[in-house]
Image (cartoon, rainbow, N blue to C red):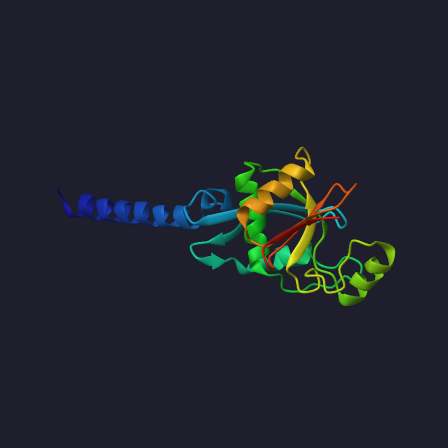
Length: 185
């Protein structure tokens, strides 16, 4: 083999290696979702029409951009105020979607609430607690179309990750990451 052929082969090998590295770095988020130890979540806030359908946890780390997007999605839409939500709530949501084998988005009707928003809600309904975990960024009310509230509540209770509440005549359930407990009002 002459020097020119050998040089071309080395350049081709380097080029192939660089292209391989480039392709690996450019992997889409969908491919990352298949990596073990990765959690995905699909949510839709029915009050604001905000949506999230992506990886939020990968390789032992909660993805900062995903956390910011999720916290914004669960914001107090009345006061337009965002808080840092308890990540265990997102894990509960993901656990529900896995348990129920559903990829449809959970429909969030209420996430974080400021104390003022919670007090206003307490004046309108008997369901809102004075010291609600919504105020602490640890609770949400939601539904899953095509899944009964009873089935959704049973699945949430099976996770033993916090409180689960159901309400007569309501299409949603409440779930929080406080003490494990259940109630029906």
